[in-house]
Length: 306
Ligand code: CP
Ligand code: NVA
Image (cartoon, rainbow, N blue to C red; front, side, top):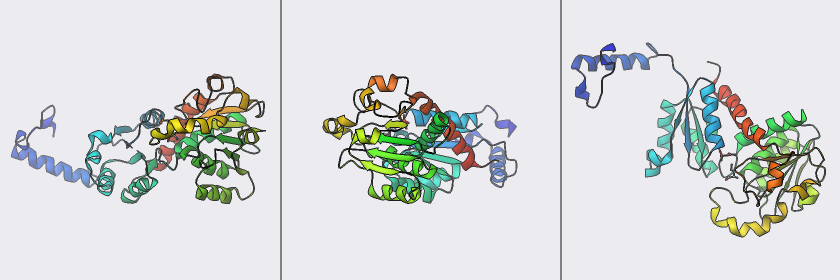
């Protein structure tokens, strides 16, 4: 098809009948795996919520693996015009090698997984943020060299980040405490699952007492008090969550070598003080960097070696 090089294709009549047959022959050969050009793997990002870290770290990770990324912004694809999710999933499956979805309902992610044969990665849902947990675990292991006898205390809202931490910490045998106001505890079924995984070998503790939770902890972790989709509750939550703010005072109850983590973006003066996030115990920038390394490993793994 050298003859078409550099030419526009605005109408089917822009090519000759002979060229049209030639194109169809080549397409059939490519579909059959012959005449296959060197093909880089392609990651699609379908994000229904805002993102800085996840979007950029996934993109850079994929580029560094030699692949390509397509941003499937819902506002400029047909999903915002109501194309059914199963249809979108089955079509994207035919083009992409891997798809990362950031959305609201975990059920929607499950549907993408069910309808698309390619690997589908949860780039955050209302229920989980597993890629964040990968980076968090990597960061803790870097800082302490082990998960044994390490206690991570999460303070704030029992949200998606807390859920993935509960499961991730239990899986690696790290102690996890979650301190939340009453009514904002993590989902009971996830706590039960974490307890089952920990099997009594590591601690899984829920409390509404932030100081008791922090005592002897090696890692203090917090996240926003109102997640994406809960913006209208942000103001009313502030007084309820105030005692759970990660600040210098609360940090003084933790182990003297404790580190401070936050998945970011942070609201200074709400869930974390300026002093805590900027202080010498903060590891939030290393944690953010680790998103990229963890996801690069994940992408390489789900795409396989070829
Ligand atoms: N922590 C995290 O997921 O950040 P983004 O929302 O910026 O992706
Ligand atoms: N819990 C937050 C995490 C943001 C990375 C949210 O879902 O908005």
